[in-house]
Image (cartoon, rainbow over all chains, first blue to last red; front, top):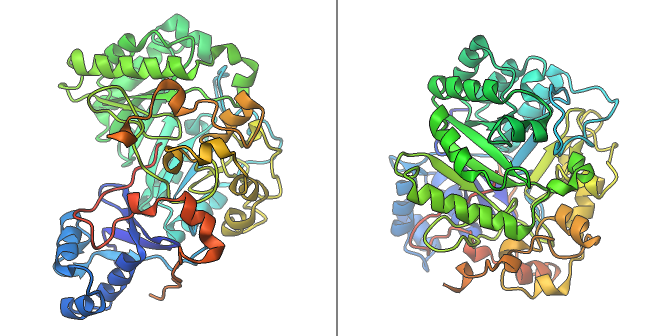
Length: 443
Length: 43
């Protein structure tokens, strides 16, 4: 098939379109999908206009040209040959993959600890390639790869190269400890979307407290080398905990000093090893205050002007980065039912081949060991896997369903609901309204 | 290529709850909108 710059998946609401160049999704309604198909059949503008008299088709075509979906009067997109499922994406939009359980660290907050303690054998290289083939076939264009430590995985660079060959956007999350000059050169030659290095302490002591290893100086040296060598984003990722919540200023200084391109802040979630170290968990208000402080520093201390990027989220929800207090970005998700995106938009593949709806699912559900891609078709697990069905059929609660944020939040993270409220149907333990995030919808 | 699209009818009674819960128009691009917006998922 000739490569085109966009790919169209048929979905229950219309079309989910992947932009290969910008690595973004575009979601379209059913009429748009019909028009795409007519364009693909080389129907003329007047023919299409006659079929859709309520639209100004010329304006729509002009908009499609602006984003590049139409080039030289031709639809610059291939269609995925997929089955449309009622109320559910035909396949995950993205796949999280813990490529190996091997790791040289023993972090207090490792969220995959319980998932990866199995005696099962890890997927072989050829089985991993089958996963990439599956993604390529069904238009799953994003893979977020962690571990364990992914660079401990057998033939990891070969795996990444195979992903690149299949035009899959690869985002890699590493602890940054095992690079040498040869590996840095090799990884710089593989066009990742970004490489995130976890740095959960801003000095030797706080790093060691979280990650149980004396690697702080080495990691900073590696980030510096990676930033010089790689043409893609080298991201410093900080999981906010009690141990580092007052060190945001220092993290910005480290980003600047190492030449990294982005500071990415994420919340510590209740799952895996953190359940034994829950004194590290911050409250939603503490996390919200950290984000507002980070935004203030970024805006007032010159980091923004220097081109350093700042990225933060509520874990499952996007947040504003414009003037005023941080608030939710109003953006419903392409799924139905109560609860977050786990099992509805995202899926999580562990090192042994078990497909989970979410990486935190083990904190509240027994692992569905039968849902292993060695024994079952990946799509069958997506459609009928035990924990997928469980998460898609959560009843929820009337308070969330009546909330004006519901279409954006849908009740929120189930791991936090279960941890803080001991009830899978409860609202997210970090309800955005509890910290005053409700303004965006009222503007 | 062949496609297997079937339209998803939001007015169908079997999907009434979906209609109640899901504000499609907020994220879906369509021919009547002024511009085309991207859809971002949190990493």
